[in-house]
Length: 314
Image 1 (spheres, helix red, strand yellow):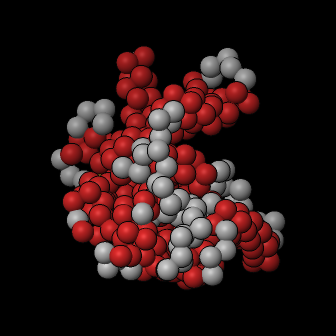
Image 2: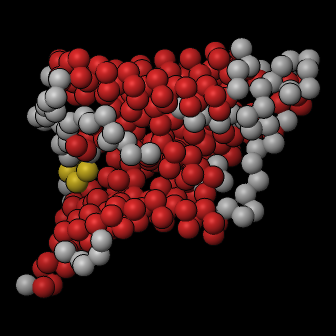
């Protein structure tokens, strides 16, 4: 009996780790490209919240998960465009714009949720479904955990090697890295610095918003204004832990996802530990990881520095 319980617990922890990693990894993969191009998007938290709310509201109204995810994608691209116009074209401080977007998205989502639903928290039936992969899902211990997941989970992890290849084995990836390090040199070589930065921030906004949509439609099937719980900021930490390498970023995301899964497992197992400490543990893991792994992290040289053609970039 104990063996069956332990086996089920291991499977549940693995499955929970993968689900908990997915929204963070989506946002982090987009942010890796954003930061590599010389931008710091602190609005990623707000973009995730906006994606979660918009996808849920539209999905519930139209009773369609497809239109929910499509709406989240549109919202993410729109917020990315706003960030780009303000920071790339108008050269407004990136930190100020990012924090402003986060505050705006949080406040607007909470306001609209209250307007539409009052004090109710409706559930979107049909959300959170999984897509089982035949044969692979029958592998002991890991089969159901890894191969009976939401379609966006599969897509997210499949994107990791693709985005790694795009970053390090293509001309576009070389341009992104060049723009983040020496934009004036890239400009002199014929690279359109503004276009590259717009491409990356649009991609980052899209990915962050889809990460939020996954929480609302792919995992929980409802929306709560504070459901993100700082995952956008954690994604930024994960990017720095992974040193902007999509594969290493994935490992960083899995670390935090495992900490979240372990938190749930400890609560279910009834371990005699303070509930407050258990809830704090995932964030404590992030702090420790930062202290251990980021001592030698070299930021992109032009991170947070707006570029002006013909100027010195300052």
